[in-house]
Image (cartoon, rainbow, N blue to C red; front, side, top):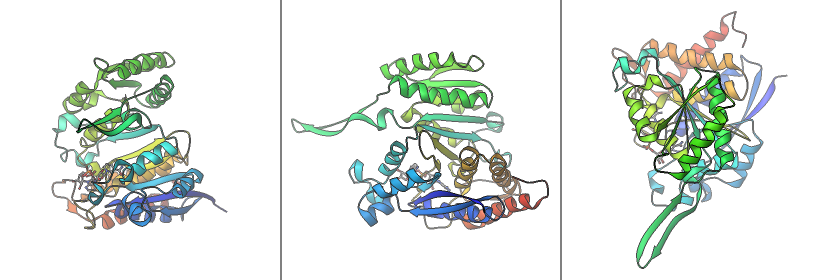
Length: 368
Ligand code: NAD
């Protein structure tokens, strides 16, 4: 009898359900080859939940997530809710999920696929061999600080958000960054705005204290504006980038363009409770429903789930290798440029990748 793992599936909005369809196909197929069974528990989230229930995340859905081994999320967001108040926007579901599940540590690995070296908007020599990991704090800072909101005084509207971090919040995310650096090239670049913000001055001082526990890891500090520039000028200098919530949001999207498309990049959000795995990209309303969405970010997110939640690094590797092989054979979706390659849709690239993974498993030495 195979062990059953319950995964909450939150496909969401726009291209979310399209990329998720490929993920579900992969999980169903993998069950035949590995000794884990999956109980896939699907729920509405974001705009889809707003339409059905009037809220972006039902408390029952959050409760199901708390009881699961992992959450796999597609994307949320829809222009039809753009004028809603913050609490009734699809994106609110993400914040409530992260906070509700205690996912304070967001990992966004970024590396270059050999096949795509000419797909990036940057020159080959700048991006060759990039391999970096953004470790972003996910449950503090400006997106959660209070007070937050609008008010009107003397007939004029004002709005406020608050950036706040405690020592404990900084310590736990800094430790994660140093731990991951130990598994890589042992360098942490901590990004802040310590020349202006008190929060960043505390951040820098706490990170320096934590660094003393990891004398084998090199620490450097970088101001966020410089980091934005260095990511374009010389991204190869980075190993682990450690930063707070909003800086990480912006820098990781910037970094996501280095390999050529945001449609490739996965993320894992880890912490005290159920982890969340999801692509870095959003719901891409401009291409939704057209069969064009690139499912690779979602499939790479499943690879991260096998690595961090199911402790099956060989399964993760098989997924990542298959993606690389299919790209090297010239198959790509519309968001990637591949000279002389063959453009295919979401469904077809999903099928190609899944059959490549299965071929891996059919080889006698593969006993993941
Ligand atoms: P986006 O990531 O949805 O799209 C940016 C661009 O990248 C678009 O041109 C889109 O077509 C393209 N793109 C993104 N993913 C792709 C994929 N898998 N395949 C092919 N092309 C892809 O960002 P946006 O346009 O700023 O936001 C759209 C909506 O998504 C908004 O409502 C936003 O709030 C939401 N959003 C959600 C998340 C999330 O669910 N985690 C993240 C970011 C944005």
